[in-house]
Image (cartoon, rainbow, N blue to C red; front, side, top):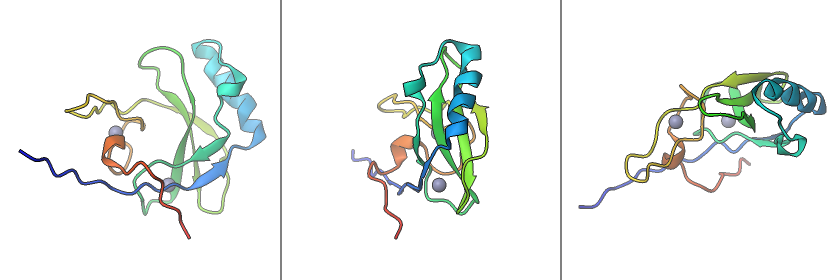
Length: 123
Ligand SMILES: [Zn+2]
Ligand SMILES: [Zn+2]
């Protein structure tokens, strides 16, 4: 039996994390363990399925511990990330590979494993 897997393109919007949010990320993550500064993601990319919604989302730092979620930031087109927020992990896992989705809970669009790996360059 063949399983036709539909893959959706990802948004791929890239942005640089403002320097002041690096310190903020360390501070917030510190409540969940001792974060390493180099682990803070500076080159952000939105891995959501291409969306019409205004905000792009990117993972900034994984928090220590299970079920603690991760630090995310969001930004609007032509804007830059202004704040960090802790969002719980998406609980979805691929029924075949058991690979967990790497987005946040209640994210819009398809889950990670349903997206094409290669980011689609916006022209
Ligand atoms: Zn996006
Ligand atoms: Zn998901």
